Image (cartoon, rainbow, N blue to C red; front, side):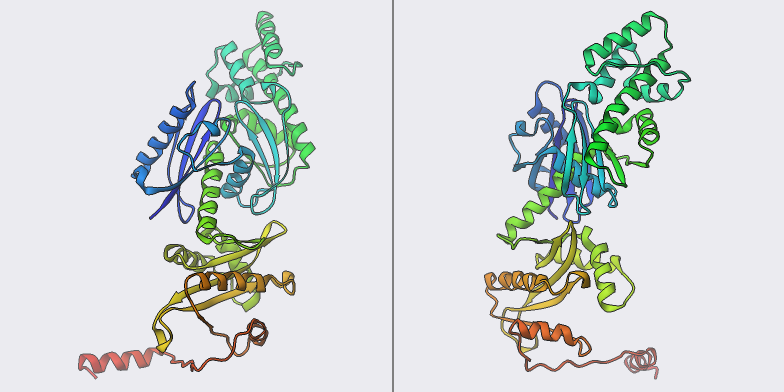
Length: 425
């Protein structure tokens, strides 16, 4: 089994996540960043490997992201944190269309496609008063544990007003309120409300759409989550893994990079499939065949293709997967040449047919076969699927000298055969 690590080096904490080829998290760790960013990345990676029961030799790729992504000397690629948080949020909640990432240093509102691709984003363009650092400074000034300040704020009955947008000036306001004997919970509620108002402005600017997912360290603040829901008037999804969203996205995009390197150049819109694509492929297959969707069966098939390294490709447009093609290489079966290619399946969402998508997908699979030394390619087509037969003939496929035979194994036949073998017939 091979693995990819994603490392998110933030200004306050450094997170690492390790994913297997199916996109499953097998190890994770979080460390305080401190002054030496490369050492923090090393510590987080070591801890995540230990949690997964792996060694560095098990990793085939390392992707870094975050504020200190360039300070990871052992990385294979660095990816912007906006891109990674968008992808990580969709991994955590597939229906995500808006991501709100509130970290220590920055706040970002991101609108995303169904596949996690960024459509638009806005960032706080002032000092840390628009991010988690504002909360940290306030907690320190009030001598309240950072992890408890959200719960304190929710106990307030009369929140104080914090007007400054600068973290330093806002801290002065807080100290002034303390000197006037304002209640701690009222001050904290005012601080949270001030931050929520600034964040809500970013959300409006980006044109938020439900579902909204919160990522970053501030997602652990119950007061912020509650006030965001009230102020925005919409549900805010928060995963227990919200703080790891950037690292998860980096690892997922790292796997995409690995697969593309294996394939070489792919046509525009075409990418390798992963197990996470199973639900969408099941939807397309159900429409094409009239059978009930079976995402588990497709996940099993895609898992096998990943393990074998066989061609499994998808086509994306309008931010979603709309087509797929699967192939494999076999040798000396049915008296065929030593290496023969088989197109096991191909399908395109009916709403996107007649645009050349199927042709592009099939050509990509055929290119894989050519590069692997295959000279003959075969497929099987049910007689009822005449349109598919016409498609393959248009791609220069011809009838082969093979006969497809079928035997239905009924229960009575199996019982009879077993009786003869055991001598009890």
